Length: 159
Image (tube, rainbow, N blue to C red; front, side):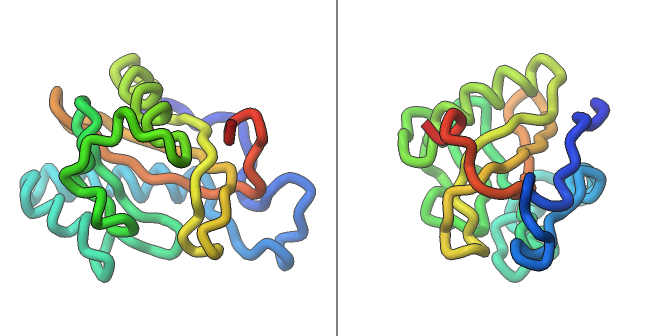
């Protein structure tokens, strides 16, 4: 496992924690994703994807949820956007998803697990926010990840 970036994500920059709500730590994010990898190893891909896709399952906890993609860009699991399961999103421009997938695929294959993106926060009225994604390659065909929201989206990332 790669070391975490030197980034405090417990509250967004310049925000009062009471005003913005509680934000998840990097350590919690990494542990959440690693627990999902362990679940795959213990239960197999099909059972794990069913659990990851369950909006009431054990892999959706507040802002944290597990998403899974194959290296071709097809969504394998996404409990917040179930309509995207089975959809290839590599060329999707909304929210920069396609760009994120291309960059995340390359990063994961290079052993890098963290990536900063701007993404819609489903727990905050679908507001575009900065998100630190953490992902792990499961095998040569697919990977899974999650992310933590860290406050208002950086215009450079959102663009």
